[in-house]
Image (cartoon, rainbow, N blue to C red; front, side, top):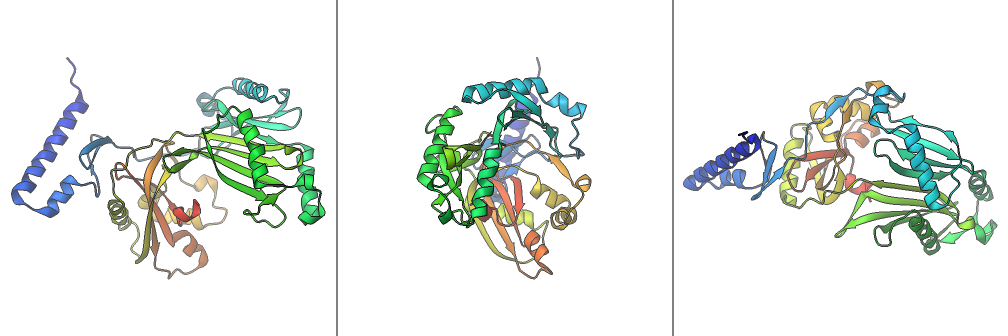
Length: 383
């Protein structure tokens, strides 16, 4: 009979918690009791288990692996992690058939990401549309209009320099833009109500994204969970007013864990402040916090383990790609508290103020772990 080591570890862990709790109750020491029974910092054990409040959760954070991939060459290692070009081409043809576009592919233009083995297969059709396939996920990613006609519309519009001097067929309002985008949304197989429109941005000669009219519009749809939109499950559509022509269609689908909130706002703030003490010794003048959906990343980890190099990369123009630090991270979308810390403004120059004046921590709302971060104010920049 084989022993389940994880169950044994869990029993030992729970036993230890009970022992500590008994000591607390005997001594009636409120301070110790808080350490044992709350999730201010979470009780994280070597078993990979987190005790948040009265519930037990698996840890979501694992220290990321540093990787040395800094090439865009299609290496044999990359080929092993992706589908073949022929398989990708067939996916592209199937998608083109589905939406009623020309399926005659006349050119291939593939590329690999510099910091991973992901290949994007890009195929150009006879009528000048480029369609991209994610080689690792084996699925459609985006399609762009590369035709002369789209280029001429852009060129002609800006040569006029004013919307007053062009025909009405070159302009539309936001309502019309959404109506046109909805036609392409359905054409590409998305169901009504599956995603909701979250942004409608116009392109015009004034550069005003809030303008009601434009010659081209960018419409974004996102999946909604309760009152929150997942920014990593989206459809983005760009359309021209002229002939209601499609310029771009892109989609990404990284599922949201929709993890429950066990950590309070106050606890998340305390967690971030405790971690920040290990990194920065500057006076904190302001903090703000908001619950958001975030993608786990290695920024807080990198900053904690090698602060000087982290900021040197951020502040150096044309920092060599081969000298940058890259981490292998799992695409995990989590419900988190974003804690923005602002430091006293006594920086030597604008560049340092911009890169080091603020830091945003991502505190997992379920486990209390630091699962990422960002320089500057992430809450503001995500609006």
